[in-house]
Structure formats: C-alpha cells, structure tokens
Image 1 (cartoon, rainbow, N blue to C red):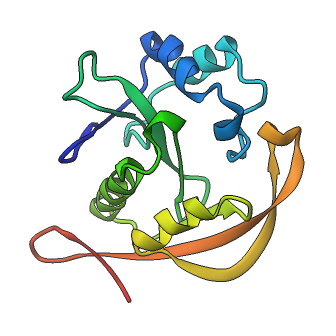
Image 2 (cartoon, rainbow, N blue to C red):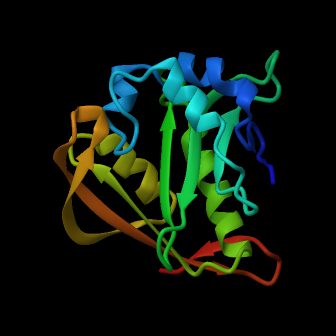
Length: 181
C-alpha cells in the first residue's frame, strides 16, 4: 500500500532502502526522540528494519519526496497495531524540519486509518519535544491528561516522561477525514 499526498509519497520500506534510511535517521537529534530506535543507530539496525516482513495493511511507511531526483526518504511514519487503538509514530530528518512534511504525512495516515475502520488513534511525544506535540494538535489530537514513563532505546533505555494524546476519527460521506471534536 502506498499513500500519495500533494508533496509526499508514503511507501513501504524495502531492503534496498537500508543505506538511505541509515543516512537520514542516524542522527542523535532524531533517535533521542524515539522510543524504539537505539543509539548509536548502526547500518545493521537499518538493514534489520528494512528486512522486516511487510504488513498486509502496510502500517509503516517511508516518507519520500517523489518530485525530487531519486524520491529521497526524508522520514518515517507508521501505526503500531499492538492493541485495539493503533499508536502513531513518526520521525523526520533534520534537514526537512519545519516545512510541514510530517503534518502532511500524519494527516494522510489518519485518513488511511479511518478507511481501515479505526475510530481512534493514540500517540505521544517526549515532554522535551514540544514540536511533536504541535504536530499532533494540528492534526486533531487532544491531550489525554496522561503523562507516562516510556523507555527510550535512544536514551539508553531510560524512562522518559511522555505526554499522551488521542484522536477520534470519522469518515464523511465523501470519504474525507474529519476529526471528531
């Protein structure tokens, strides 16, 4: 499954993406804001991530710029389906911060989640990453009031205060996503 937006193509990761993934994510500023990516991030980590079996619903996407030469990977986004309510996660390479790319990707993934029949998506961000909270609020997420301790492999396994959010999804008759207020 692929998702096209006005500027992005969200597509599955392939084994051939390992080198490019490594080049984009192996930055401590990125990894320290993620719970499951280890630091230091190595080429072996990238190879392992790209070699994982594809989920039939393709819930993990490489965020790419299809209009640029080679359609470079600039980040990643996905839904973790560990419970009844999927958890949204994302990252973006620093060269692409503050250009609206991750907000665009989040909106597209929420639309896909609604099409797949999910009525709610949850997410969280480390308390020392307020920019991620702004992305979530812009996409229609609301703070739940919960602050959880989340282990971060990128911070050596330490528990990091995480502000939790939820987003209620609904589809309009025209199949456009609406966020329930």
